[in-house]
Amino acid sequence: MKDKKIIVLMGGPSKEAEVSRRTGAAIAEALESKGYNAQTLELNPRTVLKDIEALGGEVVFNAIHGRYGEDGALQGLLEMAEIPYTGSGIMAHAVGMNKKVSKDVFKGANIPTAASESFNGNLESAEAIIEHIRKDFTIPVVVKSATQGSSIGVTIVRDEAQLEAAVTEALKYDPILVVEQFLDGREFTVSVLDGKALSVIEIRPHSGEYDYKSKYTVGATEYLVPAPISEEMTAEMQRIGELVYREVQGSGVIRVDVMTDHADKMYVLEYNTVPGMTATSLVPKAAKEMGIDFPTLCEKILLTASIGKF
Image (cartoon, rainbow, N blue to C red; front, side):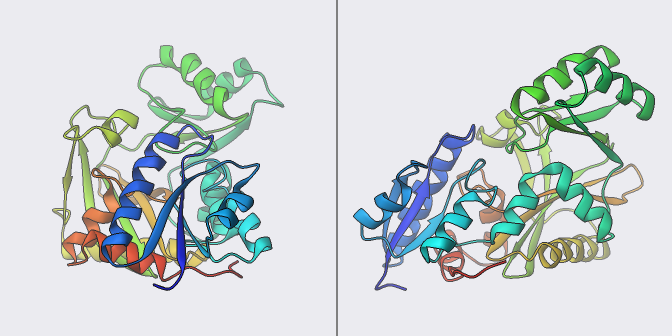
């Protein structure tokens, strides 16, 4: 692989573009420190194949968060162009990016997940959706846009007076929204690299809510690595993370987010096919705990690059 020109693709039109640029820059620097010929490239969806060719790119390291990079579109394009790329294939990305579809997959595969219901703003008015939520759920609930990452379009509704604003906010980003019963326990994440779970991390945001600001502001959240839980609970959470990886046919690295309830029962919230790789990101923290430094982690992900994924 060291004789190949590596293009670290980043940025693009999604709401997470700035985070993607930080991820891409960190990855390129790490790969260069390992002796790879790596260069970043800003994603222009209209010209991306020409841009890769112009730079002599032979392998793509996908650092695109959100639209195109995590919804399967980029993977389909690279498959057709026969350009090897890192990470999972089209299906895993498409399912992971759509919270409605991923919920359906979890339920079908007996992966524990919180009670939820999806709504289509193209078929129902916001008022009708709100009425359904009031009827079918007990406040507090979590209202999510179906296809955004980094907690964009997500609101924890703790009072019924917040419901209208939460639904309106979610529908700004996608006509499909998912409503999930709020879980009153602790928040964890399990990174899975090449099918093997890394150290479990407990997430404790100082604000009490793991939103965009808490995720990307240094010092806003406490990350406990390894999570201060029993060996049995750790093993079960890692088993669930590896189960998600297998069921969605993951490749490279994915990150599985898990919440517990007051009785420590575990529920998968979602999985991320292009986890962040910034100073505050979780996959590098989990890998470091297991003796894998950041450049080595990036190298391991790079070496999964291929075409012909599912």
